Length: 192
Image (cartoon, rainbow, N blue to C red; front, side):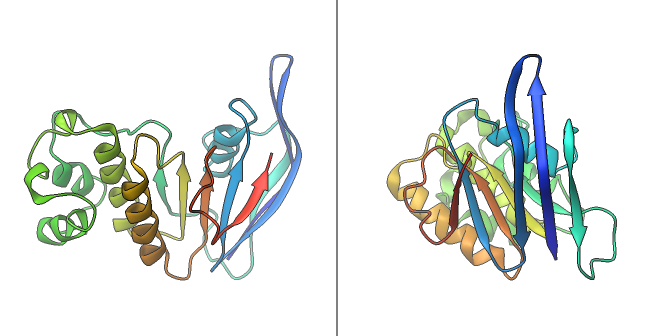
């Protein structure tokens, strides 16, 4: 599968955040787009996901892909967790195909068992990001797309999260938008 981003431009009023940006996101490869705040990283993620329209250019699927859309395991810039639910419930709610015991096992790769049954509002920011990452990686997907997934994490937590993501990536592509690219040297780094 190839996601072709071709000459994508986007403005908000007089502020141009993307200008003729092009990239082919290919299966089996990892990409990190980076740049200063406001440079268009989140906008690019939203355009790829079909949540926002580009002003010009296109995003399309190339190759033998049989559907007109992609199924993405996504981490948004904000956690998008239900704060009153625990970590397991937050992961299970995205797919009926997930089993609670499997989800618990996956979460325990990143979090101590003692926090799994607490409402996520009681977790640290880094722990909540771990829940969001686990949720994205546990659903069947064609691509992993993550917007600032490591915010609020210690360096050790970030290393563990990167290892977990890489293990779950499989043969699909990985696309990360991040200001801090430390530890992401396995990926192609693209400044926008």
